[in-house]
Length: 126
Image (tube, rainbow, N blue to C red):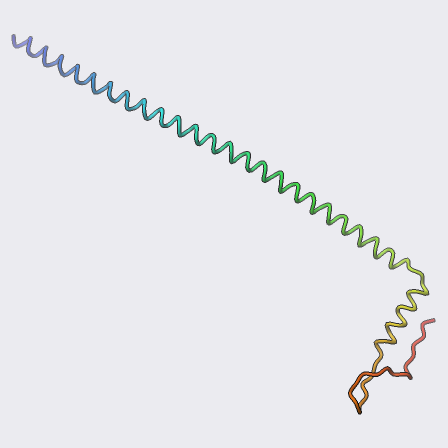
């Protein structure tokens, strides 16, 4: 009868251990499911971040291209503008330079302190 009691005790302990193992397996399965759900959320967040980065990159590249095009157009317009100034009629250029140099030659009247044009100083560009 002692052996039968020892066998029953061993059997009871085995059943308890099996129950504990089953409980731990269920717990681990829950952890695995939570981990999979978390991984799914992380994957979706990464996909959204990738899409956002691609969209931002396209926008940035498009803006950079527009800036490049505007700079090129600005340089072209400035070059045309300076080309037009340099190819203007020589008489017109001389008249502009002469009027500028005459208007810049002013003196200050010592009595009144007001600027007046010096009539003695005339420049002719020929």
